Image (cartoon, rainbow, N blue to C red; front, side):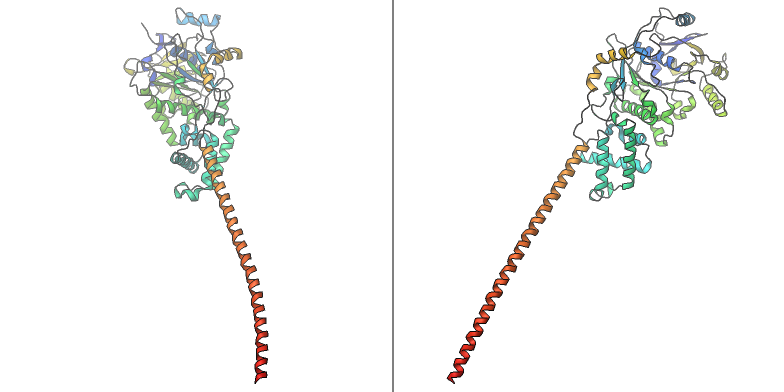
Length: 485
C-alpha cells in the first residue's frame, strides 16, 4: 500500500505526507541549525519520486548535492535502522540549475511587462506617488502598443513622459521630481545586478514542470546565495514566479497530487514591510493556487513570521526546535505550539524547545483534509548527498541541460526603448527640417528686400536726372518766351 511521502518515524510509527493533500500547502519552521534544510531535501526527494516537479531556492548553497548520490555513513545507517526504513538506497535526483545572474545555472529572465506595476514598485521600493507613475508608464506603453522588456525600456519611457507630458495630455502629466526619484532607484537596482533579471528570452513556466526519463520530477534549484544579499530582489522574484504560476496555469480542481511544489525559503522576507494591498494579494494567490495543482511550502524560523491570513492556509506543518529567550520569542513559541492539532500524549509547548537536530513536530493532512494529531518525529535521512555538489558536477549537469541552450544567449527585441528613440530622432529630424525651411524662407525674403532696395536707388537717380533736365528745359523756354515779349 502506498502511504505517501515518508517524513520520518515516531512512537506511533512512520509519518507520511499524503500527496492527495500536498497542494493544501505547508510550513517548515525552526531555528537556525535545527535541520530544516535536510527536511526540505527529503520532501523534495519524496515529491520527485512521485513524478512531481519541484522548485526551491538554494539560499545557503548546500542543496546542490541533491543531484548526487549520498554515501554510506554510520550515522545514516543508525537512523535508517532506528526509523525502520526497509530497502533504503542512496541515489541522486534529476536537477535543473537556475541562476538569475547566469553564473551557477541557466539564466532566469522576465520582462518588465510580465512583472507588472505592483511588483515592480515593490522591487524598486517606491512610495504610493511613485507607484502611480509606474502605473502610468504601463498604461502609456499599452496605449502605444510598445513592449516593456528590460530596464532600458522603463528608463526611456519615463524620460519620454517627463519631456512630453504637456503634449500627451493631462492623463500622463508627471512631475520631474518623481521621475528623477524612480530613475535613482533604477540605478540602485542595476548596481545590485537586478538588470540581469529583465530581458529575453523570458522564462517559460513549462520548463519548470518537467520530468526525467525515468518518470521522476525534475528538481529546479535556484542559486540564491548571491541573490539573497538583496532581500527585496529575492522575495519579489519568487513572488513574481508564484504569481505567474497562478495566472497562467489551468484550473485543475482538486487533483490527486500536485503538478508542481514550490518551496519559498526565508519566507519572512516576503512579508517584511509589505504594504497591505500586497499582503492581500499574496493571501489570495496562496488560497486559490491550490486549484491549479500547485503546493506552496514556506520555510522560515517561526510561524509568527507569516500573517494569519497565510498561516491559516498551511495545512501540512513541520516544526523544528525553537529557542525562546525574550518575551517576543516566547510569544512566537506559543503561536507555534497552538498551530498544531493537540495530542493528549504530547506536551507540544515543551517539546518544541527540547527537539534535537533532525527532530520535528509534524502534523499533516489525512483523510478528508483533517489535520492529524501532532507527533514528535525523527526525520529520515535523504537518499542524496547532504552538502554541495562540486563545480565539475554542476557543470556536467548544465552541459546536458536543454534549458541552458535555450536561455543562455539573451537578445534585445524592438521594444519601447527603440520605438521612443526612433520617435525622438524623427521629431528632431522634422524640427531640423522645419528650421532649415525657415532659414531658407528668411534668406529668400532678405534677398528680395535687397533687390527692392537697389531698384529704388536707380529710380531715384533717373527721377533726379529727369527733374534736372526738366528744370533746364523749362529755364531755356522761359528765357525764349521772355525775349519774344
